[in-house]
Each structure stands twice: as C-alpha cells, then as structure tokens.
Length: 93
Image (cartoon, rainbow, N blue to C red):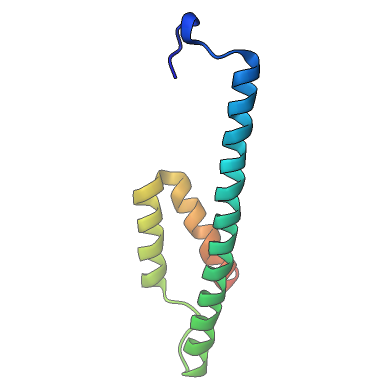
C-alpha cells in the first residue's frame, strides 16, 4: 500500500481492510493458543516421565536451548516468551 495521497485508501476501505486483518490476527491467536496448550500437555508428560524414573523435574541445559532458540528468532521479548512457556509447563522454580 502506497502512502501517497492519490493512492490512499478511503476511510471505508481502510476500515474494511483493518477488519479483514483483525480476523487474520484472531485466527493466528487461536492457533497460538492451541499450540501452547499442546506444548503444555507434552511438557507435563515429559515431567511425569522424568520424575517416574527418578529424574529431576527439569533439565536446565534443555531450558537454555529453548530460551536461546526463542531469543535468536524473536530477540529479547522472544526470550521472555520462551521463559513464560517454560514456566507454564513446569511451574515456577
């Protein structure tokens, strides 16, 4: 979309496009929620298996790998997001 005045959308066109984009965001949000729920279930199963065999509740080296992956892909906020997901899956330390 060009920012020149001659190509600028009308208010109605902009409102319609914003509505379309918000539907796309809502679809993304629903998929993110579904994936987070799936991740939590998997993480809880891993924790249960680790504890059932006498292992620790978590693996710090694995958590560092996850955090590094999120930070590399998404920056500082990505690391915070990764930490939130880890905390959701295993609880606070």
